[in-house]
Image (cartoon, rainbow, N blue to C red; front, side):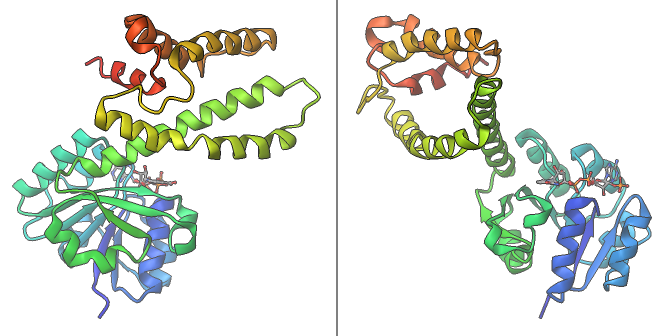
Length: 291
Ligand code: NDP
């Protein structure tokens, strides 16, 4: 018994999602603002609705995969959502997730806000490891879990509808920090007789070894003890940051990507050089919530 569902949004991601539901035998109704994008899916068995209202009316489960929160509001403006189960895969902020949940509930719908941790190419490919964060109505999640897990794994992260976006943004932000550091490393060797391909395995190995930072920081934050088990103390690391900055300058490379983090380490140390000298760098996290 493959449950029927509706999908609004047939961009790159929506189209990839649609194909997995059709392939798994779920009756699927689709709508897209630019109607031509539904043609190929119609040939594959999707029912094409002429309007968002018609698409929403077709099924209880309604999945949204639009560009941003504003497009969700635009597509569903004036549409009767009474009794519907809305799953919003559109990327947004935690605040947008909470506001959209309140908006949906006021219109008589149950609501899940979600964040996709996959590219379109990873959808329907379980071994690729992609998955989706969901938060909001636990009852909706439990009722439709099997259907939601057809395109990619599902991870429920709480009844606060802002928490899927919070997890999504946290992971993506960490990813960009990693990309920034790797970009700086490659810039340093440009123009030298060191091939990127020879640095690559060393970088991968080093970043893997430094992955301990993730769990270490969680322990420090939980205990608020930033000195326990220190291997590299903050005073040494702040002194060492000068070496990194001078080396960048010597290589003609801007430190704009790594500079802010080094500045934050220094700020933490200077706030109380005696108390903080023996910490690791995780105390710097406490400075970021500047309000
Ligand atoms: P696309 O740009 O390919 O598609 C955007 C979709 O939104 C199209 O269906 C577009 O319709 C629709 N849309 C835009 N504005 C409006 C509007 N005002 N009213 C109605 N529909 C509108 O993006 P993706 O499919 O790649 O992404 C969709 C969502 O998935 C985004 O929130 C994205 O952040 C998220 N996501 C994407 C990933 C990816 O790698 N692609 C990864 C993880 C999340 P039209 O065809 O008419 O322009």
